[in-house]
Image 1: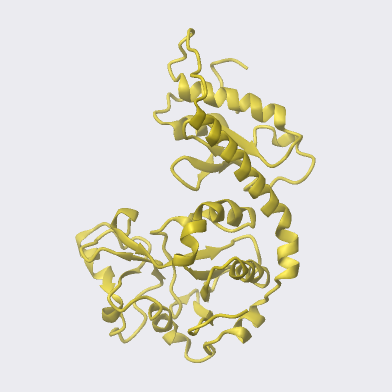
Image 2 (image 1 turned 90 degrees about the vertical axis):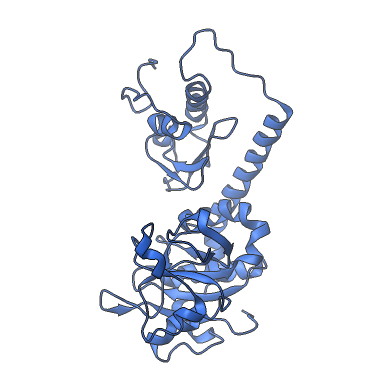
Amino acid sequence: MSDETNLAGTPPTAPRSAAEIAENILGSVDWAGATMGYCGCPGRNLHSTGNGDRDCIVYLDRVPTIHCMHASCAAEVEKANRTLRSAILNPNGDAGFVPPSLTREDKARLAERHRNERTRIKAMKSLPQVLKQYRWTYDEILHDSPVDVRADLTDHWRLLLRKFEPGDVVWIGDVMDSGRLENTVNFRTVEEWLKCEYVPNKFTCPSVFKNTATARTNANIVARRFLVVESDVLKKDEVGAVFRWLTTTGLKLVAVVDTAGKSLHGWFEFAGCEKAIDELKLVLPALKCDPKMFTASQPVRLPGAERDGKYQRLVYLAGEEVSL
């Protein structure tokens, strides 16, 4: 391959960051963090089984590395790794460049990545068993709800907000209601929101913000109350199995929200997720859940609001204790 072309056969565009270099080489990357994202495998045409959106992952910190869960593409992945590392570590293409020797920390980081990949691959392979063993259909979730949520759907937003602390500053609005001075009104305490006569808007956020916030950004978050788990791939009668399996790992399920679209949102207490968050970032995408939900300021659907003529609604709401 010529130095003048990338893996896709197109000229480089003088990228300015490691992420841009990676996308210049690999194509579009679905970034799940500042230095980690999901990409198309450089050797996907060699895969002997079907390709999934989360099969291949790229890391950019310190030792840039591409990992794919398929074995048949190993040679192409290694070739792409050499290209990626050279482009990031030697962006000017200096002929005399010598890659730095791996430090003890580098070797430990690579060993950790290999362990992470084994965890991720194990999770991907376990999905059929999870769906079978922990099956929890939509109707079963509704039936098992400790709090009866079959009553007035327009009041569901209040039921969910009461899972926060009364003094928590919560954002409620439309997706674009952020970043301007007038968006101060979108940040209120739970106590203030509950005084509203009707549901304030269609979206909220599972985190707590500064009382001076005007923008729904991670920098303005003071606490994460919940982790929301969602899948746009698994059906509503399937994703409940993932929610149920997560409760067996020690996570506490607080609510399940029907988005009035194609997905359900499982709300889990973040306090129980915090220590396991790094592993969850590997396991949940492998179980076909959306990695964007790990972003603390990600907007999510607020029950009680209408969407295309249907109510976003609670399907499950925990009482004091949860036992599935």
